[in-house]
Image (tube, rainbow, N blue to C red; front, side, top):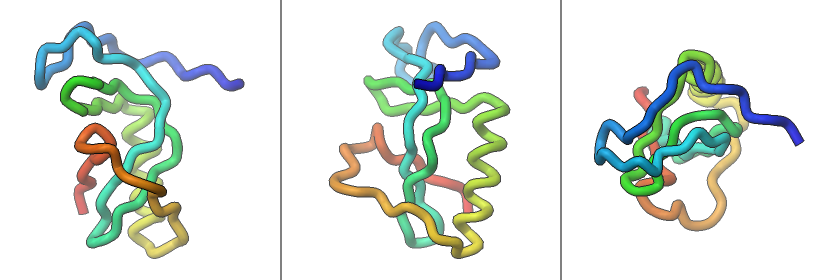
Length: 95
């Protein structure tokens, strides 16, 4: 099993809700591109289970930018399966 790359910065509290439960995770994210909802590859990021906030470091942000460009170019992308599970599983991408 691959280990999660270390974050470029540390966060003790969620900047949105002040929860101390924020954690460094490696998960897929659901994005909206145009009118489609698509699932990204697994990407390391900070995630707050209390409010759903997600924070990406520079490496993860660059990987997501390349992925979004390929998804916007109408290449095949993985559609999300099952219920989204609320706001914690939904991240709105900039188009």
